[in-house]
Image (cartoon, rainbow, N blue to C red; front, side):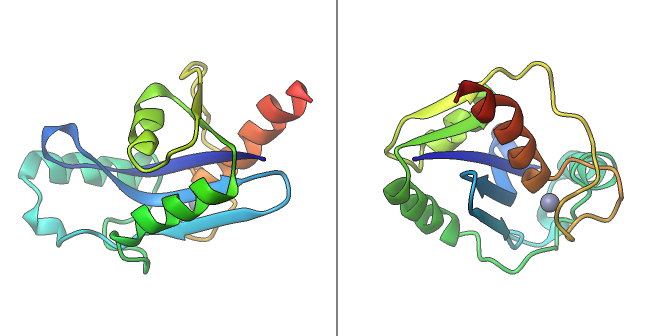
Length: 150
Ligand SMILES: [Zn+2]
């Protein structure tokens, strides 16, 4: 069975990605998590604080401090998904490579272009009515890529 995944997050030192929102959709069921911050906001360098602030204001619109799922559970959640699905689809090479570190099933990437547009978020975790929501993205990707394959 196929699963469409999307992640939204922040960047740490050395361009390391840290997940904030994870969503998955297989056509019937969803999974959705908002992860706690790995450490307090003021531990980020001023430059990374500015970048995080920009993402919170203009992109995914989720605060650094939002969320209840501990970061260390990301690995376990990915292992469970890996056991439940034969193939994982995700948009963009960077995200695909990120997910490949945690999943032992084929991860297929949709082209980065055209990029996904802002829309009304499908979950309640965003502070703006137009933003990038991982849950909206997986519904959109399922409809536009998977349904047209079948
Ligand atoms: Zn969302």
